[in-house]
Length: 60
Image (tube, rainbow, N blue to C red; front, side):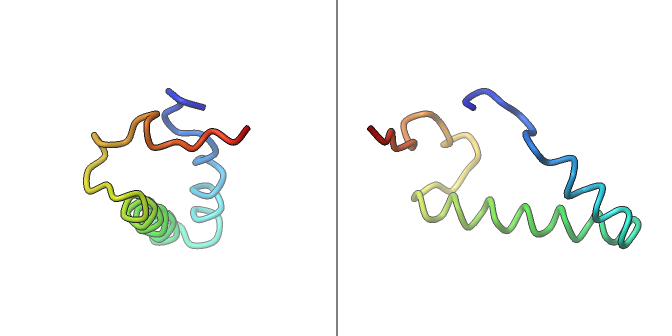
């Protein structure tokens, strides 16, 4: 949803904590960061501020 700030991010962080403690949480955050950077790159974006509703594709 547009405007959501941290949807479905808690569970992976808790799994990381349960499986690896602080290092597990850091690993999850690193993975999420890499995924975000990759997805932004696929959209031609270089900064978080460039993310807006104009990059969404509305399937009809």
